[in-house]
Structures are given as C-alpha cells and as structure tokens.
Image (cartoon, one colour):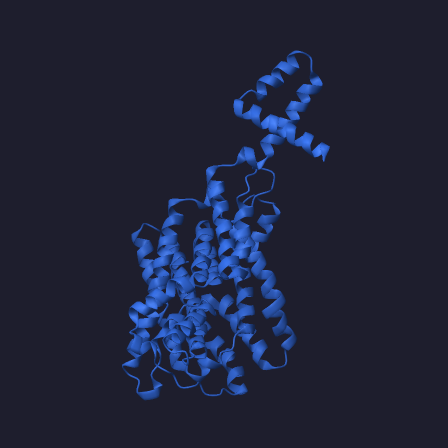
Length: 417
C-alpha cells in the first residue's frame, strides 16, 4: 500500500509539473547540476506520461466514452437489445481509450489485435455467420401459413430506397447513399455487409446507427403506430394461422434460397446462410449443427461483431459531420419503413373480407428487427384489447423483412458496385 501511495504521489507531482509547463525545466536543471539519476528518473516519468491516456486524451474521446456508457445504461436499465448494446457500448469505450499511435494498439493500426478481429467486419465475414444463426433459430411457419403477409415485409423496405434519395440529396455518393439507406431495414448485419462493400469509411457510423435504432424499436414505433392506425383497426382480431406440415417447413428454405438468390445473386452470402441455417433446423437430422449455429456460434460472432463495431468509432474517425447526417437519415429511414408497413397493411385490408382482414399493427413488424418489432406489435395489440394476441401473426412480416432487407441489399450492391 505504501508503494502504491508513493507511486501515486510521484505521478501526481509529474502531472502538476506537466500542467505548469516546468517538467522539462526541472529535467534540464537536474542534468546541468550533474544529477544524472534524477534526470533519468524524470525522463522516464515524462516518457511514461506521454504514453498515458491522460496525456493523449481529447474532448472527443470523452464524448464517445459517454456514448458507450449510455449504450450500456440503456441495455442494463431498460433491457434495450442488451446482447447488442453491451458489446457495442464496451467496444466504443475500448476504441476511445486515448493512446500513442504507432504501437499496434488501435483498431485502425495494421498488426494490432483489434485490427485482426475487425477483419471479419471489414471483409463482411461476420454478417453471414449471424444470418446462419438467425436461420437456425427462426420458425417460418407463420409466413408459410399466410404468405400474403410477406408483402408487408417488402413494403417496409420503402424506407431503404427513400433514404437512398435523401442521402444523395445531401451530397453523399451513390455508393454511400446505398449503404446509408439500408439502415431503414433495421438489420445490423445487412448494414455492415453492404457498407463494407460500398462505403467502408462510413461503416462505423452506419453500423452504430442501425443497431441504435434496432434497440430503440420499442420507443420509435409505438407513436407511429398510434398515429397512422385508428383504434378500431388496432382491435381487429386475426384468425389463427393454419398448421404447417414438416414437408412445407423443409421445402421452404430450399425454395426460398433458389427464388431469392436468382432474383438477387449479390445477396447470396446472406440469404444462402439464412436458408441453410433454417434447413439445419427443419430437416430434423442435423440438430447438433443447428444447435451450434443458433447458440455457441452466433453468441461468439455477436461478441466479436459488437466489440469491433463499437471500437471502430474512434473519435478522430467517427465524430464528423457525415456521421451526424447518417444518424439523422437513419432515423428518417426507420420511421419511413415503419410507416410503409403500416400504411400498406391498411391498403391490403381494402381488398380483404371478413376474418381474412389483418390487423394493420403487424405492418410495423415488416422492418427486420427480429423479434423486437413483432413484440411491439403484440404489446400495442394487447393495449387495445387484452385478448388480442398478434405475436405469431407479426412474426410473418418480421421474418420476411429479414429476407426483404437482404434482397434489397443485393439489388443495391448489383447496381452500385
């Protein structure tokens, strides 16, 4: 303890001398008087000080660290996507600890450990592995039993293309606009995959924006739902989905893989892994592989993805005017996507009769924030009628939104590469 107190005292003295601008003078005086030992001691302490975060810190670092702490707070206090926000928030803190450059420490320095881990983000390795896990844990029964709800997943993608034009109007290049627009799909892995191909310098801002709005689904969507859907329509009860056979469940990922990838071959890494994971689940003969994909593997990749994406927000790279524009465009994109699904659900009801009508609230689940947007639809339905359970119905547009955002990413990639 005494050694610790002594070390702290020396460090405090050096800090005071540095602030006063006399550290170098003391060292010079020590050398001039022949105090070589004292001079070397001060030189060593000055070198140590130059490597500390206190010496290299800027106000921008503290702003980003505060953002990281805020993400962790939201995850723990309000349970907003904790599996994403805790790793990302911690990564933001890690990425903004000040350091002296040139010693293979930072994420953007070649040869550093963080740089190697970031390779999976930069080259688009992690997102397909995430999709494999999603496929292995997703039940497409509700979509198979009521295929028309797939249209809602497609309708919600309007936010992607609307934001593309908005970003272009703000001066972003077509490639950057395409990467920014995908935020409207509320699909973090797809946003990372597309931005890694089209706009690598903006990937950190795009990924953080996408995951932020995914976590804020319970905050953003309900006001839009209440604004656009009259209370009478919020109380519509849908008939129970029909039972789906095992044959249908097995055939769906095979047919889905062929159809979607023939339409959008550029999305093959995402869609191929999504449907492969689902086939592992539904085949009934590869349970061990499916279990690995939906548990151990997706957990490991989520940790690596979250921490490295967070660490990519180094203040000197992240705090720019473009980042603020991306966050604003992302918010607009997400709201437009939510509104698109809701409005199209109401339009569909104009052509449906009797118990075939759908509750328009499930249109908001067309954004691919699985399963949070489906849960929001369920909760809003229960607020208007405690006996109106919409979760199973909402999962249909929700999972089709995952497919839709991947297809949209493939289309943008094909046009803009």
